[in-house]
Length: 141
Image 1: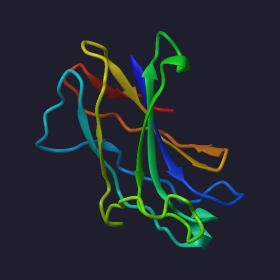
Image 2 (image 1 turned 90 degrees about the vertical axis):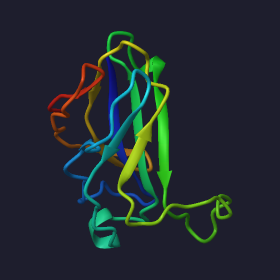
Image 3 (image 1 turned 180 degrees about the horizontal axis):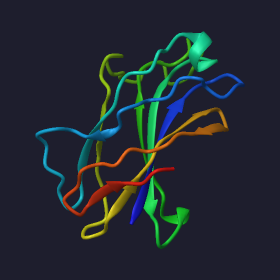
Image 4 (image 1 turned 135 degrees about the vertical axis):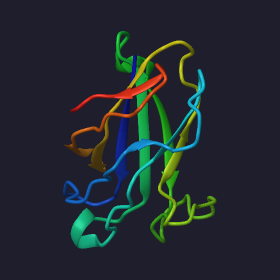
């Protein structure tokens, strides 16, 4: 069972006060053996709430029974700081609050939970139960 972690990508020193909420499967989209579409509520990206420079989100997932060494990541980058070498990279609209997970392991249940982090610091958040067809589910953190 892979675990999916949901991360805020930030650049400064403190743990963010704002977390993505209402993390669930996208309504009307089927979960396949290897893909899932997720949605969540947007976070308040003001520097006083995220305590840093908000870049976007990151989803990490791995097989629960085999551990984090099987981890895969999916980044959703909205913007980079002005002096960042990734400035030319294509960015998504800030109001988009969804992600497409791919490369899920076929016939493997997936557990999802989210956490916020900022350059090496993380704050755990409770997960939400995701309705599933046996492939993707979420546990409380």
